[in-house]
Image: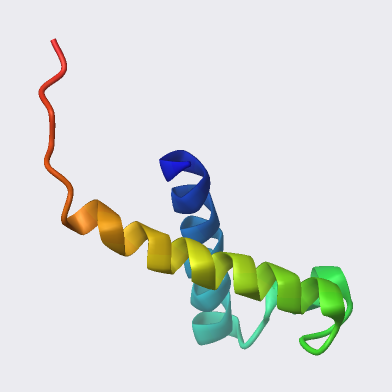
Length: 65
Protein backbone atom coordinates (compact mmCIF):
# COMPACT_ATOMS: atom_id res chain seq x y z
CA UNK A 1 0.00 0.00 0.00
CA UNK A 2 2.86 2.37 0.81
CA UNK A 3 4.46 1.93 -2.60
CA UNK A 4 1.18 2.42 -4.45
CA UNK A 5 0.50 5.60 -2.51
CA UNK A 6 4.01 6.89 -3.20
CA UNK A 7 3.67 6.12 -6.92
CA UNK A 8 0.41 8.08 -7.07
CA UNK A 9 1.93 10.99 -5.18
CA UNK A 10 4.89 11.03 -7.57
CA UNK A 11 2.51 11.05 -10.54
CA UNK A 12 0.69 14.00 -8.99
CA UNK A 13 3.95 15.82 -8.31
CA UNK A 14 5.13 15.32 -11.89
CA UNK A 15 1.78 16.54 -13.18
CA UNK A 16 2.06 19.71 -11.06
CA UNK A 17 5.62 20.20 -12.29
CA UNK A 18 4.34 20.14 -15.87
CA UNK A 19 1.55 22.55 -14.97
CA UNK A 20 4.00 24.92 -13.32
CA UNK A 21 6.65 24.86 -16.02
CA UNK A 22 4.67 24.40 -19.22
CA UNK A 23 1.01 25.06 -18.28
CA UNK A 24 0.26 21.50 -19.41
CA UNK A 25 -1.99 19.22 -17.36
CA UNK A 26 -0.94 15.75 -18.49
CA UNK A 27 -3.74 13.96 -16.62
CA UNK A 28 -6.35 16.15 -18.29
CA UNK A 29 -4.67 15.68 -21.66
CA UNK A 30 -4.68 11.89 -21.36
CA UNK A 31 -8.17 11.47 -19.92
CA UNK A 32 -10.14 14.01 -21.92
CA UNK A 33 -10.06 17.26 -19.98
CA UNK A 34 -9.95 18.33 -16.36
CA UNK A 35 -13.72 17.95 -16.00
CA UNK A 36 -13.93 14.39 -17.34
CA UNK A 37 -14.89 11.63 -14.94
CA UNK A 38 -11.61 9.73 -15.47
CA UNK A 39 -9.52 12.82 -14.73
CA UNK A 40 -11.49 13.48 -11.57
CA UNK A 41 -10.96 9.88 -10.47
CA UNK A 42 -7.20 10.18 -11.02
CA UNK A 43 -7.09 13.51 -9.18
CA UNK A 44 -9.06 11.98 -6.31
CA UNK A 45 -6.78 8.93 -6.10
CA UNK A 46 -3.71 11.16 -6.06
CA UNK A 47 -5.25 13.29 -3.32
CA UNK A 48 -6.15 10.25 -1.22
CA UNK A 49 -2.65 8.88 -1.71
CA UNK A 50 -1.24 12.20 -0.49
CA UNK A 51 -3.36 12.02 2.64
CA UNK A 52 -2.25 8.43 3.21
CA UNK A 53 1.41 9.44 2.80
CA UNK A 54 1.06 11.84 5.72
CA UNK A 55 1.06 8.74 7.92
CA UNK A 56 4.54 7.91 6.64
CA UNK A 57 5.87 10.96 8.46
CA UNK A 58 4.81 9.64 11.84
CA UNK A 59 5.71 5.96 11.58
CA UNK A 60 8.55 4.42 13.49
CA UNK A 61 11.34 3.23 11.25
CA UNK A 62 12.62 -0.30 11.61
CA UNK A 63 16.16 -1.35 10.83
CA UNK A 64 16.62 -3.84 8.04
CA UNK A 65 19.49 -6.25 8.45
